[in-house]
Image 1 (tube, protein in one colour):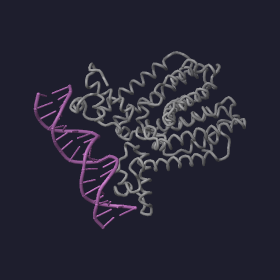
Image 2 (cartoon, rainbow over the protein chains, first blue to last red; image 1 turned 90 degrees about the vertical axis):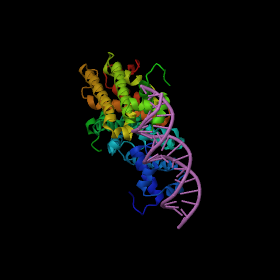
Image 3 (tube, helix red, strand yellow; image 1 turned 30 degrees about the vertical axis):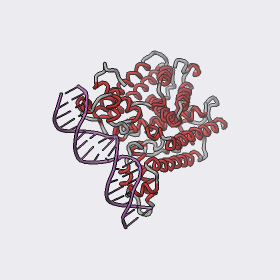
Image 4 (spheres, rainbow over the protein chains, first blue to last red; image 1 turned 135 degrees about the vertical axis):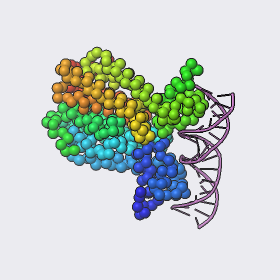
Length: 202
Length: 202
DNA sequence: GTCTATAGGACGATAGAC
DNA sequence: GTCTATCGTCCTATAGAC
């Protein structure tokens, strides 16, 4: 639960963020939200137009948080592969999955343009941002000139998102770690420096 | 809907399979199942103990179908990268996502061991099967001896599962295709033969 | 702002007629 | 086997007191 110092509105958004992560949108009931936020019905409908409106506020906040976290890691100087490895190895809470990527499986989120927009925006931003990092690496002759930045960026984000899926299916983080190791080994083999040094920073 | 030639039990299982794919388990109501199957409540509770039992039959069938389809593609002779490329490029209905991988996002599926088992089994089988293909490629000197078969297999399955996520988020199949192109380019660069011939078979 | 009361409908399951 | 009737609960939302 949340401290009394948080406003009811704030408790509702934070509760919704947690529940969207744990149970998705269709799996989250108003009862569960209100219980976790320690708020009544009236409080929720005073601050928000309904469940979808509250979910929108929650998803927007989570999307912004995810982008800020990614940018913070990727902005740290280093070779392209080092920056990518740092970002990939930083991820936490593997078995909980990605709070944004997981929403793509929710039918009501995908059907609602307002709920879907931050999901689309964030994952697209991430692909473009990683493509920039790869293009940087090519410019500095760290990476093969034949490497397609956008395609490789899509592959990296897909490994991350798919790694969560495999870990949740297996019930352990092992396949996630293996998938990350696999993509970094493939990327590292394209660098000029010793590929075995990759990931030491993560 | 389904032909009268199908038994009610069969119509229920097929309707559940479709709805699990479209809306997941928590997003699928008995009403929707019965409507699609053109059956009454009594029919469903005669053949199955309840919603979970029907879902179990549906997921088991979908899991077996997915494994059979993958095995059919991977068993076709060729180099390791050719076989992997054929399997990756064969995938259809990208925007619908993976009917098995998508279930990892469903809280009630993951919480129910009977529903979760076929999901875990199928994705684990796929990783091990792809690792075998990669090990074959190493034995025939098609692939780098330093390549870790299990890690690389996890990466490939993750690209597939994550590709679905990116495609659904973007609303187009483009990121899926890019992710597949990216991983095949990385794998192809590790072959002895011309990497540009990869994917011509898909 | 936050509460409780209430609404009409859907949920998931059971009972029992045919 | 399949149907309809019914159950108790929860859903999402509105109304109105405080």
